[in-house]
Image (cartoon, rainbow, N blue to C red):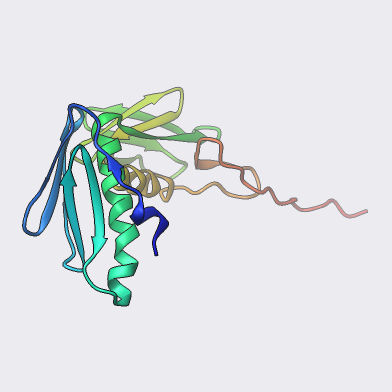
Length: 178
């Protein structure tokens, strides 16, 4: 039994949840999100709450029960208050700036790196801190991870792109022999 799947998802006022034949749509003040539904789970909307139930007693139905409940809960939360991730660019000469809908990075390479901000997400740069916001939690996290992958923090000086509050374990450098 899924503890996450058993809990009802409360739909706040101003949010509309509609279930189609093969997808679910959540509309709110922050936008509209749509996700395809797997036939192993069924979703019902009644009295201002959404409930997810497994269709059968097989392994896939039980596995997807809690997963889809979490996805729908994130969709409802995202259209009301957007999700945000913050990334820090650290290192001498490392910079980030926003140019239109592109992020431009100077990361110690021989060329500047440009990344297009995906549709539905917004990015802001302030003093080498990049803030990514959007209604879709999955898209925000994926875009933040792809930016971090451009230059992961290295363990000797800590230079690179890291999440805000991320702790990088530092290694000792070469020791001078005596």
